[in-house]
Length: 146
Image (tube, rainbow, N blue to C red; front, side, top):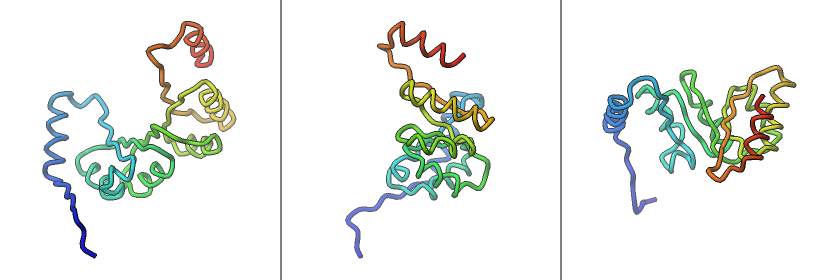
């Protein structure tokens, strides 16, 4: 079948871009390769391989299926973070496998904390705080986190 378009990733340009970013930010900050949406159509497996060769060890996905695909295609120990959808029943497996995820609300945050306690493990949770966060919500968040 003939295709009407083709997109090719230049690994040389990718490496050069990562080197440029590193030259500006140093080695301290973590660079995360966002591979959601099948790496924007480029293929998660292919982009994980390229990113690892460029020294990237953190990947961001939209959902758990993509997170598992990153881990399946990783040749190294990498960190994976889910930025979007996940279901409460997925949380135990995510915590067991060290997959990071966002808590967009108190319910998910409390569920994740309780699940981690039950498992005897630490959960790597990113908390989204909106700029319009009310004082009462801040107090509730601090209470949950302590």
